[in-house]
Image 1 (tube, helix red, strand yellow):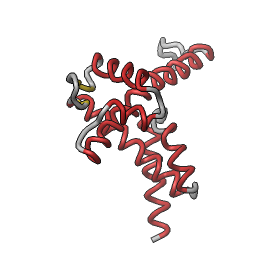
Image 2: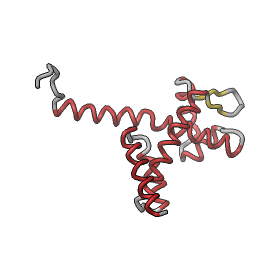
Image 3: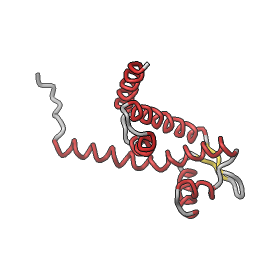
Length: 149
């Protein structure tokens, strides 16, 4: 049955895949930083630039550039000689990133990946996984965990 809509070419499909990957890379660093900022505030009561740099394994200057970008994009607020604070938008991003991380981590554990490896792998996968795949991970994890109980 002809609908008048043409299927995307192989090149168009491939381009769409690579665009999705580029988009994920754009948000990956922001998500990691806002998640860390939220963690630092929860653990120590504040998120300082020096702590961000140390935990991310980057220079102070690199962390400062990222924080400036996060501020421009509305994820954090900074004040001279004060800590870094998440905006509502930043807290929402951190929460979504943490949710994806927990789903991926639980899935990897459920299929038998060693804890240390699962923790490392989930850090990369969480940024590139679709909502559809996350839902499948959750379903499979529940089934696997129910079978062990």
